[in-house]
Image (cartoon, rainbow, N blue to C red):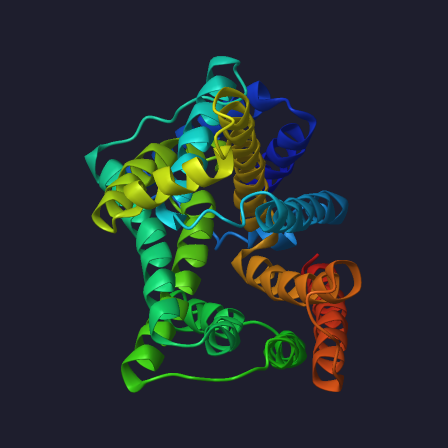
Length: 364
């Protein structure tokens, strides 16, 4: 019960900006954990409840809303502002670099404190950063081997693989209603992205491997913040971002994105030199800042709402992006299959939310 109370106070402190209190609570909680580990034979610990069922519902919805809003905002920003940039690795390097600088500023301002980590913990974080960049690499490779529609319909199964990882690796099961609610979410998202499916056997295997990797990354992110390491979300982002930035830069240079980036810059400046270059730099900076706040919201949402909820939100974003493209941007026309897909996802997400709320009440 003490641990539960500490966790709730920590999450409320993060929402209100009181990171100093969060850090102090984390330090005291860490001391208790060390004491328990030092005397494992003299004290029996009950299995810790899952954080998503211990977090206040209002707090959870605030962070889910922030994550969803920033995610949609970045999608729209990329469509209108950075649609001509064909350097995904360098753009990822920009995002992670600004995330590193942003969390550094927050660290200096006292919003969080660094935990004392040993060599094993540092190696875990290095491995996590490799997992982060490998997930991007696998996505890029998949897109080069299969059609976009096929890639999206396979990626929409991430919630199912997330459940599978929890079941097989962590021996965690969900309620029957939770499993059933995922069906319209996954099927509906697939209907939203229906199109011309072109793929090879190798492309299929690589895409499935990418989905497994994406689910593994989401679950690993959650476990680093809620498991034995129990890092605050801001600290995890702070420690991961510089490593991911270096790796993304290396991948970008290997992929030959440097010349592509400079050619794009020349096209955007169009001979206007200083002012056009300055405007482009400001737009890139704005994109990086938006990605930073999205990363903060994503990590915190993953921690307090759970990895499965994050993947479900990803499918909902897919449906909302399609609806936005039809209604606002006029990118393509709505057909019956797309319309039913959007409806299925929305209904499925509503069902999933109700089931999770019922599960939370049942655990109290």
